Length: 534
Image 1 (tube, rainbow, N blue to C red):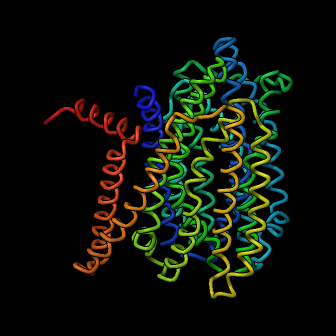
Image 2 (cartoon, helix red, strand yellow; image 1 turned 90 degrees about the vertical axis):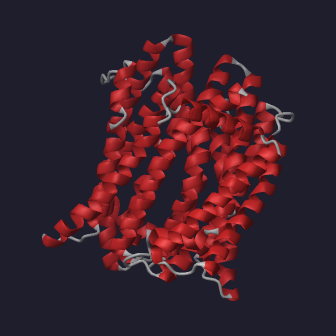
Image 3 (cartoon, rainbow, N blue to C red; image 1 turned 30 degrees about the vertical axis):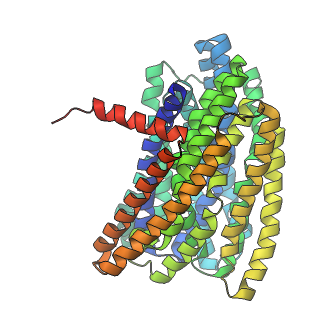
């Protein structure tokens, strides 16, 4: 029980910070949708932002984190803190040099990059996207050093501040639109540039907020150019296949944007907003539990404790089942009212709501697989195994391309908008990736039979069906009994449906004796007892 509570406590601090970030992210999307709708400006920004964002996910928060944390942990355990600080200084120095060159390349070649990447854009939209890409070109450098800082803090058990850092990106983006849009219009600049400026400032702040806790731990940055350092070489070798292993999602995004750019104004934004909603439970549960689990399995791998590794991995998988499956059911059941409440304001019309809701349904099919992958892939790198993630990622890309070919060309024949095939094929790729990684982990780490993962997952699948039905029934019943009321009325109905869904999930999980449900209620009870009474 103590191990379960420990994992949930670590994941809980990450989830709390991530929840704040995700809520602010939804507010950012609300503001952007209110000011610019779903079309010309937002499509251009999302295409521009996806270039540095793709490189960030591949080389910074993805491959770099997965390669750095196990290496830093092993050096700290075996050689002591001073050796670990030396590795961190050398990595910061190498990143500053290399990524400054990448920044310059993106700035110079932005027109050619966007002509290939967003081939369906009109000349005016393409010009706006190029300018935004140049503004965002240093974003990769900022978030790469932020990812290293996050890895160091996580290794020392500090999870809250690193998980909170992305919230600053959202705050900066919101303020950028609200404060800079009118200013840019007055001086004759496109108001949409405020989106790029706000995001760039936010990227810088993500690193800045982590500097004070780093200094508290005793870290002091000193430039140290030593590219042949054995630790850096190990990180580089781990990153190479790790980059391929994490490439599936990013290639999927590239393909989706390239195809969606050909369907006029709107599809890029609809897909992005739908995936933003999918990322809420993924960030709260999959990423949070994955980050907490990475620190634990890295320690287990460094000390050779394979049974401990299997126990920690199993606890993480049960926790994801407890949280991600009901969240999927809730999103599917309440997808249209959720999007209405959050986005249907200003220039964002009901047609955009319906299209975004349809895309959300297609993405939700793969949500559980996507969340579990956030645990599986870092576990492989903690074990020093890079082959299986590469095979899984390559297979997922192949599945995505095959599904795109099938859906994009067949869906119009049955009267379905072809852009939905892009979301549906992403779910196909997620399940392909999940299946191969699950097989590989069994071979690499050993069987986790006896740890209750399958039983807990099946139990939560049954509970999730009930959760979805209760959410949909509650919302439909309240809409019938008390229709209208504008946005306020819809918020009340939606809140009641969500509350019923949470109660159904927790009650069902406890009734079916899912271990993490008991650990969760025990942790909540302890927190309640500690809370001072008035």
